[in-house]
Image 1: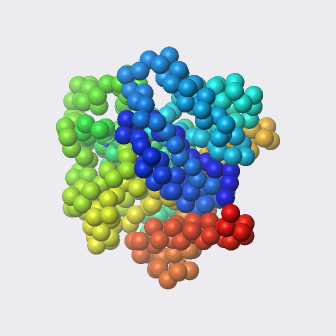
Image 2: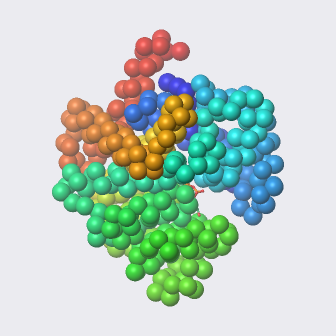
Image 3: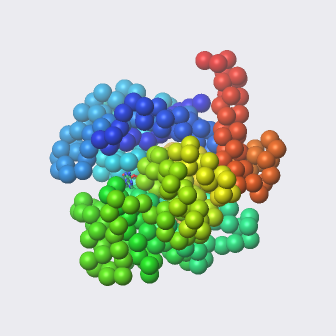
Length: 365
Ligand SMILES: NC(=O)c1ccc[n+]([C@@H]2O[C@H](COP(=O)([O-])OP(=O)(O)OC[C@H]3O[C@@H](n4cnc5c(N)ncnc54)[C@H](O)[C@@H]3O)[C@@H](O)[C@H]2O)c1
């Protein structure tokens, strides 16, 4: 399937094995999305933390000097991932454009193509919340008043926070690789801006507690033992192990929404399964970024002018299609719609069938 779309990750732990798993997950995720794209992933063990803008720019340029020949609108469309945000995408795109002589690189990054209207940066996080809403609606429930815990404090996590607040939920935690922060009063828009400032200045989340005295930062701990109705995993792969999953069950969590790709270890999956926790798999719930990329591309081609509201309603519609496609595949293959595993199995089945069909049609090339 193609063209391929997937994230570029800059993180010291990045290696070939991680790139392969991310690419594999992305292939399934893209096949499940309404756009039926191919999957890709890549990156480097370069650590942007603590580097100046110029150092980041020079690294991005070197990276692209080699990679530009593999990118292009009909080939491979890179997007943001851990350690790669708008700044990095801008530098990568600039060098791509310089070397390929092609403006239509289809790089995702709102400030490059059409400032203001695109919700590219927000799309994955917002999409996760829309997906949770669809699950709750099927249970005749809504997000309003529900207590939510979350890991991560990056691009995805902060946009999930934003949308949860808009829907009247009570998000109470964020985390980084050193620990987690809990604010019993819940976050609001001003607090999110404060978190953004802390992250932009590469400070610890611990600093938040100096301003908001009722909050607390726990070193070397994860947020999964905090009482909650919903949990959003938005940090990294394998971030929920067996004991984390046990904590999550004991803290009253009913739904786990996967923002990070493959956040649960196999042992954690067993614990959640036994406890009948409903899981929104990253493959389906994390489709927002693909949707935004595709909408941007079409917008770029058709030069239409969409407002953020138009964009958001298209994102909502695409998330709904992804949700329904997953549930349909699950019920077609004998899972009850209400089964806690329906979405997990349904999304894999639907993706697999789409890819298998494409391979068969194209002569298994
Ligand atoms: N950006 C996207 O479009 C996209 C799409 C789908 C899925 N994802 C996944 O979402 C997750 C977050 O991506 P992002 O774009 O927000 O990245 P980011 O670099 O903006 O943020 C990552 C966050 O996770 C925290 N973190 C890293 N390692 C951690 C650990 N071991 N424990 C706790 N926190 C840790 C960091 O402090 C940071 O706040 C990743 O797993 C990524 O694969 C991203």
